Image (cartoon, rainbow, N blue to C red; front, top):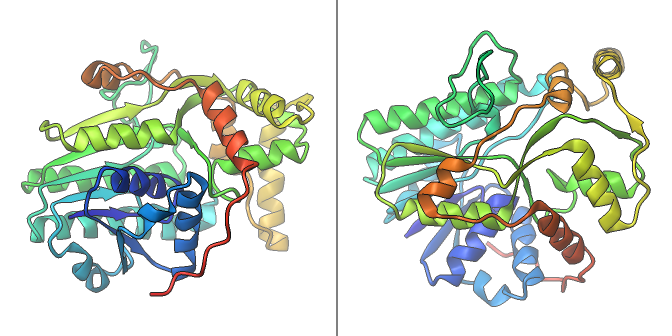
Length: 342
């Protein structure tokens, strides 16, 4: 039995689809029943709804050990995709609870139930920081605790520490560090907001760069890595390093929207995150831009994918074709499905 946490999110749902196609016995965790509909609609989007019925769903929360125990019975592989993604400083405690404490619970149960291997989905946010003489970030780049990091990055780094702790205690582990993940479905959250914002005519762009990957490439790599016996390795999973300008302009072309015309300079972003903090503090609005998000939008780090390409002899799908596929599927009508009944 294969267990997937985060099966009602972008990565976890696509992983479930690929695993179901391969005739695997799959169990997935959910917290709220209505979220299962997101995964059902994804299967329907690919005309694979018949495969959805192969998944065994268990209601559990990664921060609640007692609810997780039933999910681990008879499990030999675990994909830990569940995580909280937030760049709002107000979510610091919740990020630590879900991403660090939740991962610690998964590691402990893997050890208790003698799970054969755990694949943990981390993030490029948890990678190291370039020293002055270094040109690219790799799996070996060292984390600098003195460098500025968002609460999200700190929580994902802390989650990785729990994974390595599990390895020291005898658990077979592998970590993947994906860049920004683009994929169809889940249209109102996560990276899909790139598409909806551009379509609405968002006027700003920046020239900062980061790594991107299509969700299909990510889950295919995860499936291959879990079956290769090489414990304790981490792999950056990035198809291309692209500027935010290039990505936003590409999306604008694909959705036939007006391209942004205003480059958000560092000084503008510095003012913007301070104004956002002011509004959040005094008017109780939700934070949309933090200090660390502003820094990320203008940083220009190059993230290497050479290790995974060499290990699996893998060729990534271009981000241009990924974006084109996301836009194409966003226009496809999805048959309304009956509400999931527990």
